[in-house]
Every structure is written in structure tokens, then in C-alpha cells.
Image (cartoon, rainbow, N blue to C red):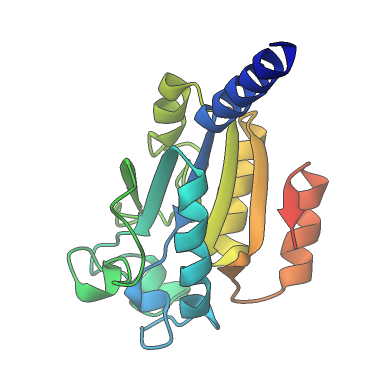
Amino acid sequence: MTILLSITFMLGGIMTCMENKALVIVDVQNDFMSWGSLPVDGAEHVIPKINELQDQYSHIIITQDWHPEDHSSFKTTWPVHCVANTKGAECVDELDTHKAQLIVRKGFRQHIDSYSAFYENDHTTTTGLHGYLQQLGITDLDFVGVAYDYCVAWSATDAAKLGYNVTVIKNACASIGSVEEATDKMRQMGIIVNE
């Protein structure tokens, strides 16, 4: 009897833990794949891992870059990519999206770019994700997706600043630039980066 009660208690604790955790899938969109306008090396190769991970979560959020066609970053920083309502902005067909409860579209304001799932790059304009997670009682966030050193890192860093327990699952991310630099910065913020 004691053993059964202990197992029940332990399983209850595990379920509570999972109910407080969410997976955030960042920008797994056509334009960031090898065939897209802003390809991220190896991006399509992390999709099977992301799909596999989803079975471990009760709460799943997807983010998408969702730019107007005249977005300011196209003139100064990036090639035209993820224009709203185009094939390039759609999630990759191979990504399992049916388990997601929320899609956060960011970067739709013409004059402000947005790397983070929580804030536009002015660090003031919010996306609404934090309020949504608070309503659900989420305390722990795991991040995967594209690009590790930009939108994943910015999202994870903002999540840590907002008080979440944050983990980045590195082998389910693809990077544009320096993996080591991004990893060091995130770890300095107390973010767990799984190799």
C-alpha cells in the first residue's frame, strides 16, 4: 500500500511539473530553410527532433516571423523574408503544428523588428505571450527552433528576465552565426543549454 501511494504521489508531481512547462517552437518557417530567402544552415534537419519532443509537453507555442512586404529590416539588415500571408512565412509542412495551442506572430509592425517571442526589438512593445503564459500558470519554458543565435536566444533571454526557468535544447536548433557566443551569453543569464 505504501509503495502504491508513493508511486501515485510521484506521478502526481511529475504531471504537475509538466503542466507548468511549455515548449516554444521558434520560427520553423519556409524562408529559413535551405530553399528559402534567408536560409539557416541545417534548419530542416532539426524538424524531426522538434516533432519528437512535442510528445513530452501539454503546452506548445509556435512563433512566426510575420513581416509586411516593406518592413524596415529589409532595407538595412536582412533580405526580404517571411512576408505575411506568403509561402515563405508559413511553417514548414514537415513540422507537426496540430498540437500547438498558440501561434505568436511577430515583426508585423513596419518600423520595428522582432526577434523575441516576448518583445519587439524596442524592448517595450509586447507580443502578449507573457500574459498568456501567466494565465496558464507556466513557470518553465523550453525553446527550440531557428535561429539559435537570434530569435531563440532573444526569446530565451527575455523569458529568463521575466522570471521563467528556461532551457534551450541546442540539438533542436539551427544557427546563423556563432553558437559558442550565443551559448555563453545565455548561460550567463542562468539559462540551461542542453547539448
